[in-house]
Picture 1 (cartoon, helix red, strand yellow):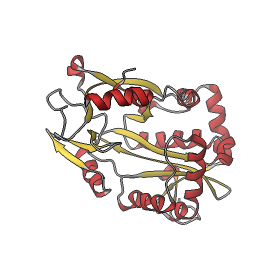
Picture 2 (tube, one colour):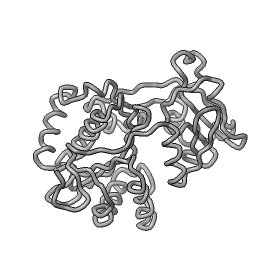
Picture 3 (cartoon, helix red, strand yellow):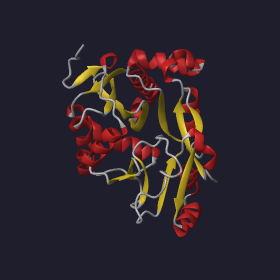
Picture 4 (tube, helix red, strand yellow):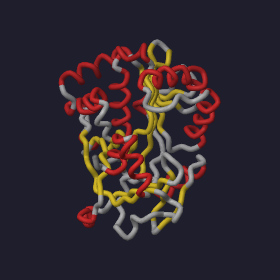
Length: 288
């Protein structure tokens, strides 16, 4: 069923292209990200220039493959294969839904099930197939959400509009939106690579929070990914300092799953990050 507003598709019919690691690398290059091919895998520059990790964060590499992809890298990390996990020098604290093929309302606690039902009564969740809605209503939602959470810098309007292009120039992004009386209350995005679904960004307007829109959008994204054959859904990295966020994810069934990695970092950068941003250092390495 195509809904009355343009460029919207009912979430029950949501679909997008699942990628291989190589295909994702090609898409990331098209989006302007620096990608390097190194020992059979594809690495991208992430965060500060000079830090690299595989484009598919949970791709499993051998210790021989998990090495700096360029001599100019000041830092890198990569997940190791189960067979070589004993060679790990750290862990990446992934937050994810395991066994996605069996994920349904029964996996939620009673409180979260009640909130999901409330959302289902008040919020219409759709897949965006074009930019119209976000061009009209998206920026105020992003600005409101980031003013509240302060987890990253608020983009300018021009930066926001430029970022929208990536969603619809390729068919691998899934963007789900929550509509309350035809007004955008929030949206999230993600993709699937080699059977692993990644939730990338999520923005919820403050006025829409009482509808439990965040619960509904994450649950429906999980269901879409489940239908498309994903085995697990990564919902970010463990934010140990954000206790309310971690409780929210726990009630949705997410678990913290430390994945063994091999990593390296310039000693000066390591000391500086560990001193000034200890929580970021923990997310990079799994170490306190």
